[in-house]
Amino acid sequence: MSEMAAWLVVWPIAIPLIGASLAIALWGRPNAQSAIGLITITLQLVASLVLLDHVWTNGPVAMSMGGWPAPFGIAMVADTLGSALTAAASAVALIILVYGLGATHIEHRRAGIIPLLLALVMGVAGAFLTADIFNLYVWFEITLISSFGLMVLGGRREQIDGAVKYAFLNLLATTLLLIAIALLYGMTGTLSIADLPGKVAALPADAPVETVVLLFLVSLGMKSALFPLHFWLPAAYHTPLPTVSAIFAALLTKVGVYSLVRVFMIVFPDGGEIAREAMIWVAVATMVVGALGALAETDIRRVVSYTVISGVGVMVGGLAIGTELALLGTIFYVIHSIIISAALFMAAGMVVRASGGTLISDIAGLYKGAPFLAVAFLVCGLSLAGVPPMAGFWPKVYLVQAGMAADEYAIVAGVLVSGFLTLILVGRIFALAFWREATDRTPPGASGRPGNGTALMKSAIGALAALTFVIGVYSAPLAGVSERAAAELLAPDAYIEAVLGNSSRTAAIVTDSMEVQQ
View 1: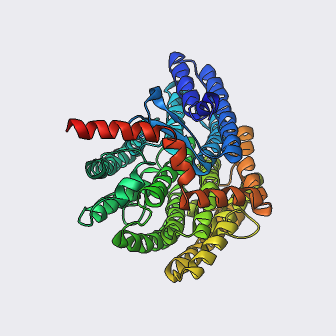
View 2: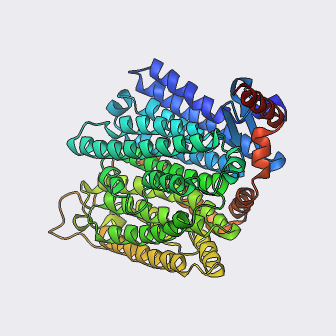
View 3: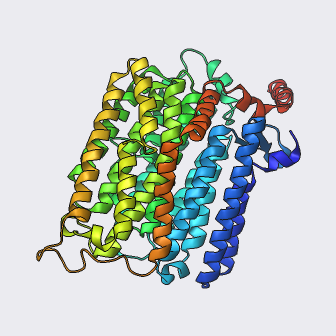
């Protein structure tokens, strides 16, 4: 592996770090910060696509920081899954930023939304590309700090309340994650994700592996908003600016799901019997509770928050099955959810902007006042429900097929029931907020127009709506990427070889030396 190829892993992280630093240096100059934000995420997207192309052609690529060999040094690695999610996150972050330039008041840009957003994107890329389980915790902390700053922009009382709940519960999750990592390190003596499978397999039968696995499930489940640890998400995601809500929904829970996939497919490929069984029923409960919660809500922003929770259950359901077809469906759904979650929060922001209210019962006639928004919302909503030919249809088909083949009928039922409930939800919102005629009882402005910045906002939502339709009609490329990523998870030899590589011999020599000293 050439040194130039190894550097490809670093650039998706280094570019937003440099961009955030430049944006901070230009504090108080919002237009310059906006330009830096657009350039930075565009460059990150280019770097991510180049990395994905290299991985697709040559297999996983890794780089050891400072020249220290793995498993003793810190390594970054890109396989098909990590590089594909990094590219998807960069693309959607760029579209969200375009939306934000139209939706965000200039005072919020003066308050630092651009550098905070770039720091968040950097943390997400770092989590997707790290090969060290402790540094996964570090990247979680970076996303937590930056997301807390984004959540309180505006300083409204409900934002502060949501931010406190969000920060407290996520700090609790990271504390549990740190405890799990410490216990794992104490048992194995390594933090390298590539080195851990062999060390875990060699543990004695009385090692508390099941306890550690359950700790990972609880901590990462809380970060992913799995039932019954999901309540922080609808309490927090509806409070910040629409741009912030969109990027939270698109990226943050996906980092949690990605981490669950890495831990359960690489570190604990056999898992724990209790944890695997718990994951099945937790996934089903998350799907159904998320969909029912969305149906019960009246605030359109909280409705969309609950749909994010339901989607997390679908992803984790595929992981619980664990077959190649199920993992294909999970990875496909993660990328689909990155797109749709962002689009729906952006659409909800435009609905609130156009109507002046957040309660669905108070909104009417938007089909006439904002027809483009109505069509985009309907397309994204149908994709969320899994209606063909939208992108959301295919991963649910894969998951249902995988569940039937594995006799996991509870997950099949969860996917179908949650999809049906989501379809009812989309129809209800569209009928009330968009199709229903405004009456004398409709609050003034409830059927108005989105106002200033509409062109940028419409272009962003339109791009995501078009993308989900195109992926649905021509799903082969994304299905191919997802299939290869699933195969690499089930046979991680190339991933392990990329990280350890020639350093395996060096690591063995160092280990022998340490044993002699002891």
